[in-house]
Length: 130
Image (cartoon, rainbow, N blue to C red; front, side, top):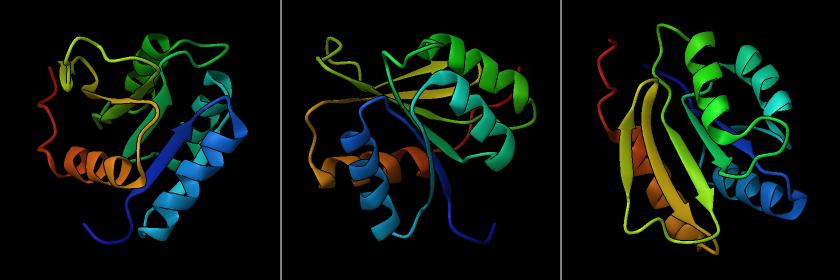
């Protein structure tokens, strides 16, 4: 499996979206981004990302609907998702769900926390298809 890992960033706030993208590009990832769930699905079709970083409150299509749609689009590929959330989700670090593993990253987060979460998520073995 050669080449740089592809990451899709879905975040409505342009400053946050570009900050995440710049951080990941500096760390050697290939990054695309979208401001809402509809645009994200278009990017998924085009780029077939290895990982999606998505605001839990993404506009137009919420995060759970986006996860289901991504699973349908990429049937053979279980794409992990890192949800960006404003508050701690009672200590949940990750959840295994149909369509892939889900991680959570609480805002605000540091550059190191972002990169560590991305690397940790990408290094995990994919879940077996059902």
